[in-house]
Image (cartoon, rainbow, N blue to C red; front, side, top):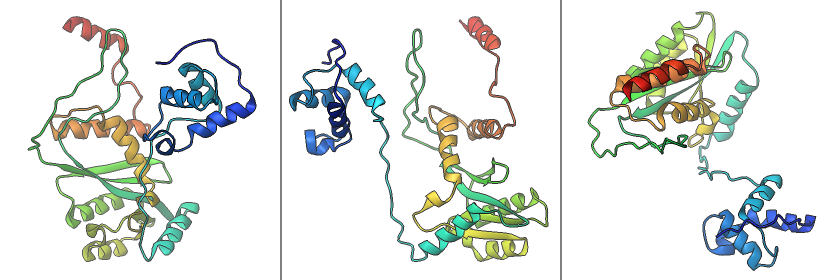
Amino acid sequence: MCGSGKRSRFKADVLEQIAEVAISSPVALIGMTRWSLSKLRDYLVEQKIVASISCEWLRVLLRRLGVRWRRTKTWKESKDPQFVGKYERIKQLYRKRPKGGRRLCLDEFGPLNLLPRAGRCLSGKGKGVQRHRATYSRKGGVRHLIAAYDLESDKLFGRFYARKTWVQFLDFLKWLRRRYRKGETLHLVLDNYGPHIKAEVVAWAAQHKIKFYQTATNASWMNRIESQFTELKEFALNNSDHKTHEALQEAIELYIKWRNGERPISCQSWKEFKRQHRAAA
């Protein structure tokens, strides 16, 4: 239990120790995988670093000391023998736009299943946490979004497919090529997934002024579209339960239109929303 007594003033050396403990390994210090405010407080008191402190005051101090809660992340080391060459080539492309060219990052997003997805929501007086159904049987098939991120215009766009073989990928490249002037060379950053390097695809790309820049194996972070997918997943898919692929596709397209500045944030006015809810009550 955390007390909420009078806020104590601590000297600079004590504050320094508090911050140092907070960012040290909880496994080594308390035998657990993460700190909580109450556990950190108990440890500080037990070790006589502070005589007493409330959880709320500890939270405030940590924030002032620049200590923040952050999600841990995984990292996979690339063992690609051509890592340096691929990295330098892509870095150079990002640094400077080729003359008469356009830089795009390309990747597949999916597979997209029809399933409820957990997420986060705001709750408060009169509104609890949203609930979604559980599902163990997914018979609706999947869809794939092949997307491109234009570094020059800061636009994200793509097409949906039921499959993602080289045939669909080539169809997407042809659609992409038609979006730009014929004299403009397209410089595409993409991974070495099989359909991307199919002989028919490579040959067609070379004939139509498209150059490929392959990321290293296990180094998707080289592709700037990945951060765009993170946002898309968070605001179009998480905390949703689409029953049809048409509804799922509409949700993704609605987000992309907002992200590209092609629609305002509002889908419905507040007055109309309230009116509908009163009528349904």
